[in-house]
Length: 203
Image 1 (cartoon, rainbow, N blue to C red):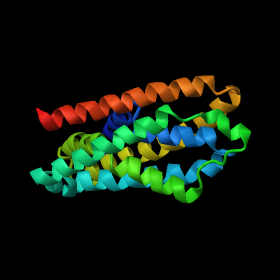
Image 2: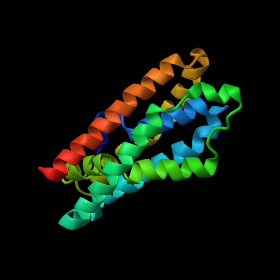
Image 3: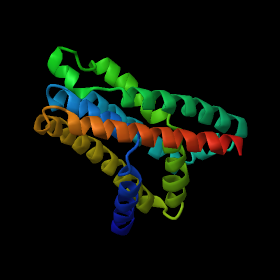
């Protein structure tokens, strides 16, 4: 059971570390909120969505859904346009505006946005189903739940740490120059993912 837990930790870290839409949003909320606790709605919602997706993948529900060809295509098309929109927002975001009187996102907006970047990102959905769901098939009983728990714990801890990192990084980078550079690079990565999804749809 310990081996299954460790395997889940390593696998989950490998999936969540790359810079993606979820990570970018949680990081930016940590940076733009006046106190890191104010970014907790986005952290909790991103963690909850990941938990639901992981459970669906392990239990096989999501595999059944993606077996329907037309439904998979619809999800990919919606995700394509959503990622293009998120990339545009990220590219044009200016973290230093908070020091000029702009208000950060409210808890309700954080929850809505975090759920959308978690559940409308087809790349993340396919990763969860194709990697976590597939790898869970090698475990049964307690080992499967140890593997699942490890994946969920890594996700929750990662989002919390990412939010704290964003919060303190902006305090060290008063002019927001570094964070603006991160946003530009992140937007390019998001658009690259969108381009890849579009290419998958037309090939």
